[in-house]
Length: 271
Ligand code: KIV
Image (tube, rainbow, N blue to C red; front, top):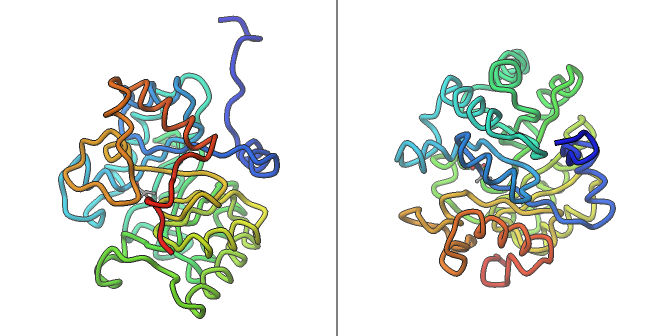
């Protein structure tokens, strides 16, 4: 393929421009090179090597047992499958970022051994200093707020977050602090539609939603949920394979639905 035919890679700058121009960002999780190639070729902007691999690949109950070595292994596999344009975003697993120093060491692994281009960590205000240190050292960071699956036992289950005004205000303040600390992207999981819209309208960095409504700058789903092969897909997900019949077509249908905002519908949202 000639140089002129190459599609431009998705970068942090491109993601910000997409927010500004109103083009929705399509993100899916991926865990290996074969699926990464399909996602990349069929229009997915960002591939998240999520610690959800603990559940959908390893069959565990939660994401908590996932280790750094496992994250590095799957990140490297996904990066090897991306040939065209998708940006690779890798999760820092449970207890791998309890201090800025530990986060720096583990981000170095995800980026040097795994070839990740951005990292994601869970948490609001308590992670501000870590985000500041990471971005200071050149690590692009996505902060995951709302339902934080690594805290499932502390939260007492997988529940919608930010429902009352005090909790909503706290989440918005956390997002603003994380942006000030240098975060390049936010991810909101299981957040009421109105709060997700309020946060998206209050920050300059892109906001990706999962169970957070159409008002976000983009959407993410767990690959196995959107292919209908998870034993228990959450209510905010949708099976894109059943009407399309092949994996590449299901991925294309998801990307198109995110871009034209026909997904998520009201049925996939919380009020
Ligand atoms: O690990 C993961 O797949 C995630 C998504 C649920 C956003 O963080």
